[in-house]
Amino acid sequence: MKTKKIGIMTTGGDCSGLNTVIQRVMDGCALRKWNLIGILDGTDGLYSSPARTIELNCKDFHFANSHLAGSILSNGHAGTINFESSARAGKLSAFNSKLKKSLHDLELDALILVGGNGSLSLAYTYREIYTGLSLVCIPKTIDMDIPKTDKTIGFDTAVQQLTQYCDQLLLTARSHHRWFVVQTMGRDCGQLALHAGIAIAADAILIPEIKFDIDNLIKHIKSSKRDYGIILVSEGISLRGHSGRPADMVSRKLNTANIPNRTAFPEHIQRAGDTVASDRILAAGFVDCAFSAIENNETFVMTTLEDGEYKTISLDDFFKAGKPQKDPNIPNMMTSNAYVEPDSNLLQIATNMGIYIGEKKK
Image 1 (cartoon, rainbow, N blue to C red):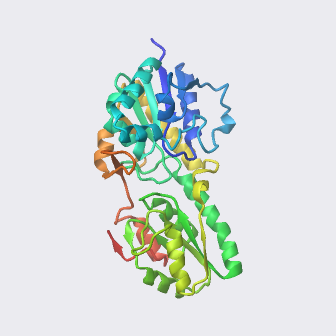
Image 2 (spheres, rainbow, N blue to C red; image 1 turned 180 degrees about the vertical axis):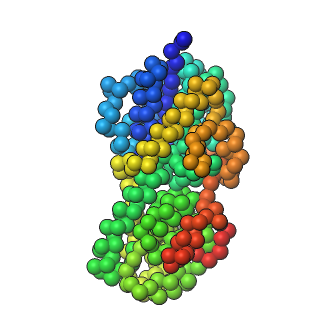
Image 3 (cartoon, helix red, strand yellow; image 1 turned 30 degrees about the vertical axis):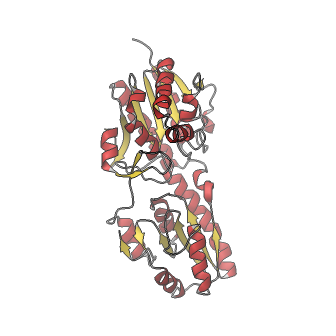
């Protein structure tokens, strides 16, 4: 039987858990006596002539490092910088042809692509790049905005990072009798803010999916039995008539209402931190599922966790299950997104905890 040659690349924004995926893939290939090639810098590395690659084996990548954040393969410059510039210059066809040729020259039997909803949407839209091999995608993102999966690699660690950050802020908030307006990542999805907000029992959680009234937020804060606390603000929210960073906009309104406060921006520490156990388990499940897909000659599929079951679904099902939006950086490109649903039980839990989450559900 021919020894398979497998490729793996990580694309888009980085997060904790990527190295765990790489390690599990390495171990699985070693057990099967398959060769494993790592593509450096995602599509940036694939676009190079020749493609930038390294051979991956257990001797070169120490198992003890698999819990570290980031990716030993690197994700490139913002993941799709060459793709975006090529699209804007009208040279997308040539760019895609170059990627396809690079993959052909590598003579891969299968490619494991670890990416977010942008990377997966690109793979779905430009599937001709990956003809001639088995393409298996593993979903990762701290935003947890990928349709058709209950969890994504990196999300739980990001929640833990944000929770620990806010736990420390609460100590100084109590000491100085002030409120902290903490801006979270998440893009247009409020899952990260919602989960971390419940974990820390925040006083308010503002997310893009729920409309809020700034005056009602102020009333809520003023009615608190405490004179300190945390207001979590997802980066995707907007405040009519105001511009700037969301946390700054909310902070200015609180200042006007004589509510002592400071803003805090955890930024990329949400993408860092040692990978928590649940993300490591998720990585193991997704990789096991990916190997089954490759052995069964599946292609253009994504691994998913639904109701406790690891399985694959087609990229077509992934894309059509979400809510496609125009990509802000790539002309004529649509990205499939998932959001906090109006019937999410976490919204009701937050309300029952006395957390202000807004007024109307969009």
